[in-house]
Length: 168
Image (tube, rainbow, N blue to C red; front, side):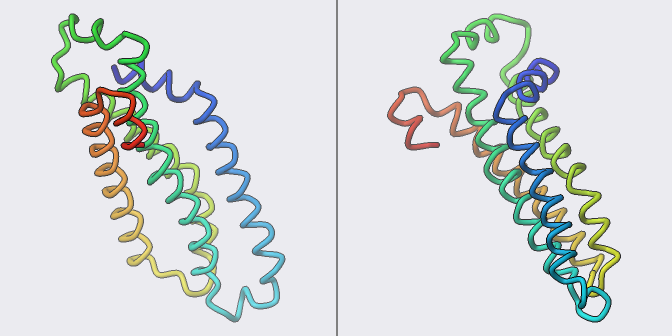
């Protein structure tokens, strides 16, 4: 399930578009922010500004895009009538859900690894607090996993099209 779901998720147009926009916006924040704050980079605490913009983009990806993809993956199984094929295999429901959750965690890790160089740049600026930023990143990771678990639960509980729209 993990390999199948990961292959499906990474080859989707949604993941590719969001990932490229994510990298492009992070790079633009880096370049334009450096140009705009070039006079005060060495004298003011500017790390908070750069981290704030980078974290906002990371938050959109891990709090909105990944849980939504997780929710849609279960609905797609029903829509494409592949859910019945999964049920008749030797896989238990627990293994199916773990595979889908593992795919979401892997996507979260990909977004974290993509933002890592930009946060590393932020660490060279004045006002960078390693403990606080580490805490924020760890807690956001845990919250994102919790949102994915909730999205899986909502995807399992949704059987009718009207509830699918409401749960989205």
